[in-house]
Amino acid sequence: KKLAAKYNQLHISTGDLFRFNMKNNTPLGIEAKSYIEKGNLVPDEVTINMLKAKVNENPDVGGYIFDGFPRNITQAKALDNFLKEKGQSVSGLLALDVPDEELIKRLLERGKDSGRKDDQDEGIIANRIKVYNKETAPVFDFYKKQNRADKVLGVGSIENIFERLCSMIFWM
Ligand code: AMP
Image 1 (spheres, rainbow, N blue to C red):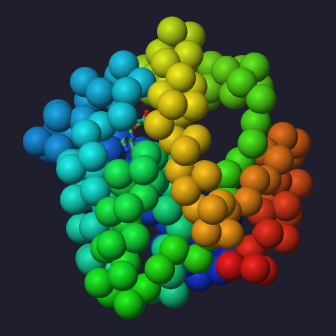
Image 2 (image 1 turned 30 degrees about the vertical axis):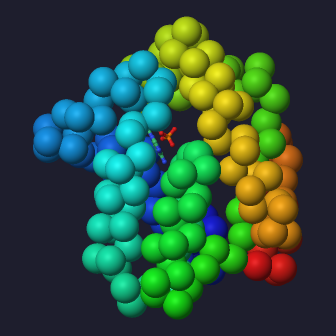
């Protein structure tokens, strides 16, 4: 959110979009719920269509910061094709690097008041980390091979991490 404000971009978080739909009991929310509550990925077709719709609804922005998307190689390729049709492309990917123990601590802490079931159960959190390593980590290599990816240390204060991210944006 801080990056989107500073660089005049639209922040699109697929997780937030799913949670909004779940809260409003839309057909999309009802479908996504069973996956999200187990810490699994929502099927690609549903996720990609939701993302495309959000971008298409907002054509006149300075750019997009995708948060939590793409989560696997299928989504990354779909995003590349989608942007290509518009004469656009992914400028870069920044991956926040945080040790698993710290992630578990933060998620459990957030779960105390976020109301998110997937933040309240260590088994679900462990599954999310497993899914990340298997499905999402390869997305970093996909963009890295094209010189479009970097890692940023995601440990420290929000302000510190924000400054680190900003210092990486110059090459994008
Ligand atoms: P997040 O808020 O990014 O942690 O996402 C919460 C949950 O929403 C994830 O554990 C997935 O179940 C689902 N989700 C969010 N983004 C995606 C995505 N790009 N592809 C598939 N599932 C997603």
